[in-house]
Image 1 (cartoon, rainbow, N blue to C red):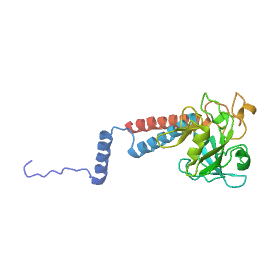
Image 2: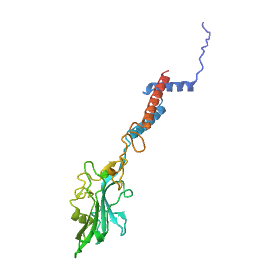
Image 3: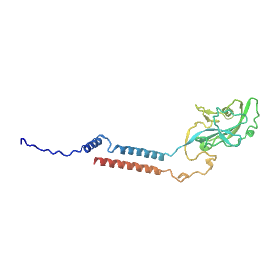
Image 4: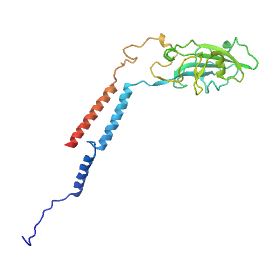
Length: 262
């Protein structure tokens, strides 16, 4: 009626709650993922971790070292010391004893020295001195069968007395008595007396055998049904655990998606 006032009842407003609800709705509609981003990051992190564990369990082989010719020097007594420089730069003196061994090792700490006699007087007894020359006794150990490249057999160890000019290097002395030698492009000694025929300093996977002075062909063979510690070659416990964690994470993602839609 004219002149009559009507009251419109306006419901109570909660601006902060309403704004938060609108933001949540827009975020859930704009996001392509059915679950919050923190959960997504956690899921991806755990998934990557599990994949790393599974790959490590499926391929446990690791590099045991490198297959190469190690260079040694006699310290004047009965012990070998790992040379601090290569044979192409070392210049031995008259009466020195030096050795080489084909081996598999990571560094000088676990490398095996040459085997056999290493006495200068006995090795060079039949090589008389000569003016302007020097005599160097060499011990050449071709290593164990376990260290040989596939399809090759190491020759028997040998010794020699090289008589070379006074300014000759160890490489010169070695070439005089145990050629042919083979080097790579970085001057790394790859072969002595043409052994091995191929390869040079390549990494070798860890088979558990290791380098030792005992020929594995004369030792007792390992059981064909498993390794020495009794473990079999089947899937490891870590592989099953990783698969279980992946399944659990997938179920959690599905549950979270349904919860968001509900």
